[in-house]
Image (cartoon, rainbow, N blue to C red; front, side, top):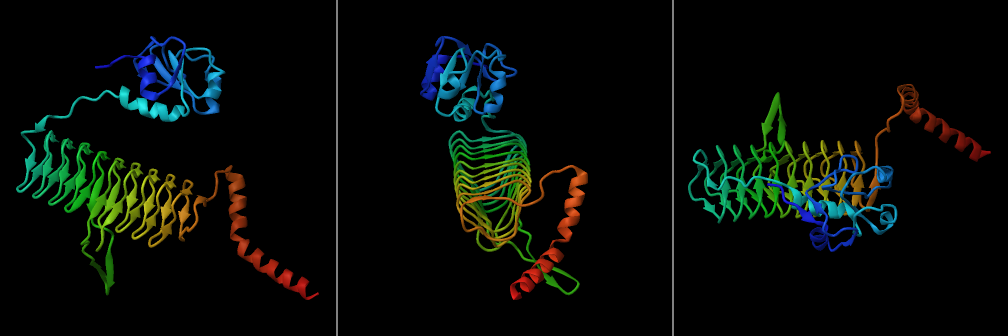
Length: 341
């Protein structure tokens, strides 16, 4: 059921300054373009200033600079985008999860279930599993033998947790993600491949979010590790024995090969490919569709790949790219000849 809040109520939650009518009621968050008088919107990007004059929002979250440009009700905060994120939790409307263990769920032997655990329809909990207080296991999800799920962690529907996986507290795992499948390990043999059985596990810290259909492979010997506060988007592949540092963010379709170490507070944009056995320092930022083939030892922003261009121009540049080695060789010869003179 939706609740309404006065601007005064919201200001207290955000430690914000109210300008306008503190009793004005807000029922939802919305964009500047689609907001109604019962909605709260925000502006954090100058590109959206053009909508300030036409928005019908009941109030805006603004920083002190934008406050001068809007005459309606407003909550003045230092960081409007952060304030919006904080209020999104207030306005989210979710039905309470199933209370207790659904009759169709299966729970193995020697399990330890904390207080207020919810296990949905057709979920399967293996033997020796530990679920902390307030854990929610969504319908159709599977938690393998001897795995641990920390308190208040939520598994959406159809999440697969293999055996021997440890997940911390306050995590969110979205539908279709697979934690602890075998890493891609095979030794070549005459005429085929010999499987290397993956003897490690996966350790996920606290307050980690894992997106839909993301796969985090178990380690070959040591564990694959995801540190506290990391956020991982949909359709990300994390290979065996990878280590992800605290508060690092990884966007969709990124693939990280085995045994690579990524530091804390990094951002990896979409469709990045990172080769195996590399190390990325703390605070490294990789732009979209980059190929990382060597370790990065200094913080900063890094890019590779070819930016979008009209096809006619791209073809010319691609042809010139193929000529670079020849041009470089000719340039070296010219420099040597010129130097000899």
